[in-house]
Image (cartoon, rainbow, N blue to C red; front, top):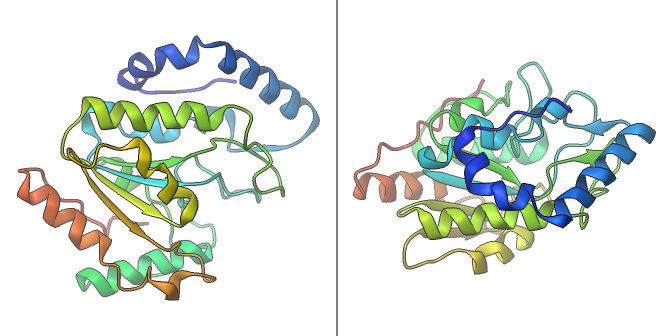
Length: 225
């Protein structure tokens, strides 16, 4: 697989790449790709790390695993390529942004690369998935890898914002030093739970207020195409 990852992240995560569990994970992925279609493409598995260098991260949004239908997964959590139908959870995210900051983002595009380039790490806990089978690559080592990434951000950086939506993401709060960073939690933006507190959480304006208070340029959340 022709993987790409920003050098800053490779240095931070080098111990993970060299750990025995990662060799097992690679062997699992090779076997999976020989038997099944898997997403995202190999070159985009580490897209979250490649698009947002370690020292440029301002905000972390944590998803669970990639979209598992054709053409959707692009290595950035919640994001789909331009021209692909916007998934329901992302529709609700955009609705909350519009309500929160008074914007008028259309619901016709879901490419969040514009966030990633501004410093939003769009990280799935599991970085690959078998086609049509949600959660199929969980518990094979990816969570160890991405937990390490969260720990490194927590320990080495200061003044980051972590947006944790849903019980799975909220459980990751234990990895984060709340004395150094802002952790915001809410129900998942899925249609099944968005009305239980995701709508009205105002995480996007709260994140920007925190960044501005720490002398950091806020995120332009309207950068969706």
